[in-house]
Length: 221
Image (cartoon, rainbow, N blue to C red):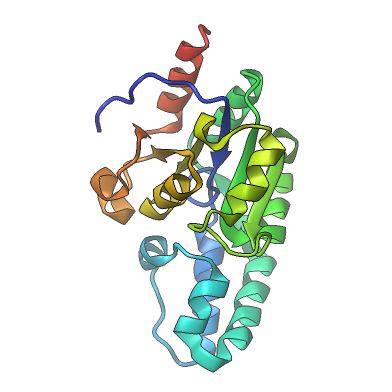
């Protein structure tokens, strides 16, 4: 992965799953509980990582048809029962959140995880106070990659879109950033999503440590 060019944001919006946290075990359990109810094939954890991108309210009607609301209820019951127990930060994520706060950069989260689940997870990790806003699926009229969540998040940061990085791990995240006018920043190698070429970010960092080092160097720290 090539080195990221110079440039420091005035604020950062983060994706959540696979960017700041690993909560895939709960997501996989929820999906497979819904699949079992309707006699559908189970997905492996790697299949879940590779396939889950858009929000539930967009994908479940496609997957379950007229029974999608029943599938939704099964999914959320299973996820709520276990998500906090299996939730772990991604490597360096806690340090990255703390570093951004220490640099005085306002930050928030835009995720396609249901809003109440997202906020419960942030509180569980002790991170909630670091974010000016935590937006999940269902909090805006439409979920990402639509710009609607960004129109809610940017005023909370008090910044224009062009001065804000949206940091995520997938091509959908980069598309969402571009559509909102933010700077699309890839964290990780996107091996689960076609690699950096498919994501086409403006900036790319292999890991959280590299992102922190870049931010600190730009601030003279």
